[in-house]
Image 1 (cartoon, helix red, strand yellow):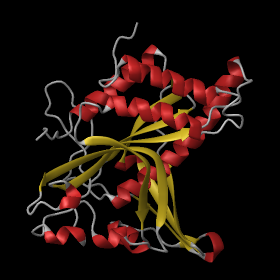
Image 2 (tube, rainbow, N blue to C red; image 1 turned 30 degrees about the horizontal axis):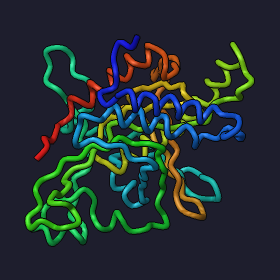
Image 3 (cartoon, helix red, strand yellow; image 1 turned 135 degrees about the vertical axis):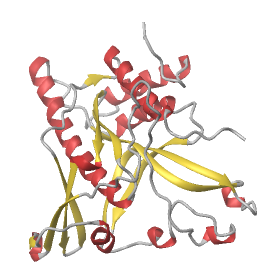
Amino acid sequence: MATWNLPGQTKTTWFKSTLAKSFAYSRAFNKRNLEYQWYSLFCQILTDLVDEFPNIFVVPQFPSWVREEDFNALMSQEAPPESGPDGGHVTFVELPNRPHTRAYVTPAVGQQPMHLLGSQTEPGEDDQVLDGADASFDSSATEPAKDAANVLIDFALVHVMAEHAIPRHPRYGGWLVTEVNIPVIIEQKRFTSRTLENKALHDGIGFLLDIARKDLYEQAAHLFLQFERMESVIAIATCGPYWSNVILRRGNVRVEMSLIQDGNWIDAKVNDTLKWPEAVSVEDGTSETRWKQIYKALKAMPRMELP
């Protein structure tokens, strides 16, 4: 019997998750063992996880990008340029700490809750009619940039703060988003070969999770650069129904930006002290404990009450 249920989990949503897992495992309907079929399982789990939070929602394929000029402006210190791919330049730096911001962590007993702070920028074109109120992104950030380094994050939990829009712009339903935070990111990988057992199965899962973790480091680096006030993010690596998570902090990540022929790319490295827990299946009791810890962290974030 489950010791803790996801807040939004019902008999119906539990059955959906079960069928989603069966669908992804299916040799008849997932012959190529693709990762995309696994999206429905974690989309349902994440939706159930944030069910009671009106200002946290699930965004698949969340984009994050950094332009070269923004990268250089954000860095407080730079290493000497080195030779990069295609004759470009490489800048290898540690992400600057932002001591005036609050980190996204679960508070210890007796401490006040702390939370992640994300982006608060100038209003975009559509927002200028709303008495100049702050918007979540500026207009230039929504325009294509050929030199931007960018990633697509499989799933992101997006936390927003908003205020009543005056006048009530019909596109916003009477609400204007003023701040955006990204407390959780998820990288989904396909399941390993379905013929593997025992140690070979364990090693196959571990191999794909290592790839997912490297992707998460790069995604976190993009987010830390795009959202200057963001101090940490919960990163979840998955392989089929198996998953593991860790808190990535700004101080864990060093980034490398290279200028290549078609634009920029960012590589990220983390310090050797970062340890990931053993991966568990979504059906395992340990999985429930970990989701509960993430839920508590989300609950510590600022909450908007229903109007």
